[in-house]
Length: 190
Ligand SMILES: [Fe+2]
Ligand SMILES: [Fe+2]
Image 1 (tube, protein in one colour):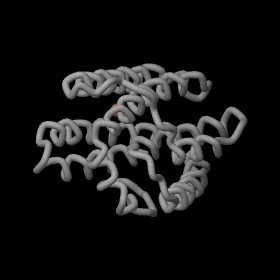
Image 2: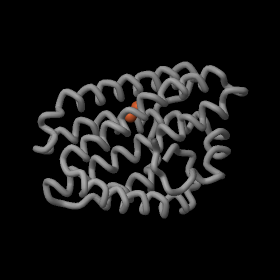
Image 3: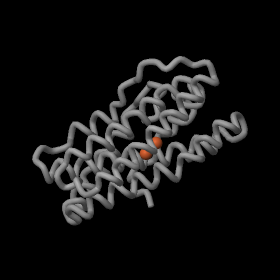
């Protein structure tokens, strides 16, 4: 289902596993931002009819946010400041202006973020299974939901303009691959 043209860098998993508490703080912010992104998409005229679907995604992301906050509490980790993600910043910076162009690009960016989350949560669930089974199960439990968000956003873009979605997806998958190859020393999911 996922169309990525570059693998997750080999140093990502060890970096994340050795900083798991910091990563959970980053993850909490990621879910918070996913909820606000779903709500932000409701500003586009082309998505007015999808407001219920977008609200459902926002509610789900807010529930994920709550779950991560509960995990932080349980582990005695304070909810702190997020690290900015160079990958997300670069994706969002290339969203074009203009109603139609902007909504397609914004949906594709949201979709790729959900898709990479889905892929990374799967990798984390597998790697954590022998060392932190409870956390492993938590990550495994999010995979399907983030995968659905990935698919929903792409289908929303396709319903607005299918050929344009293909063109922009081609651009964004190349951009994602280029960005994936750039070093990122911070203990963050993206
Ligand atoms: Fe989520
Ligand atoms: Fe999501």
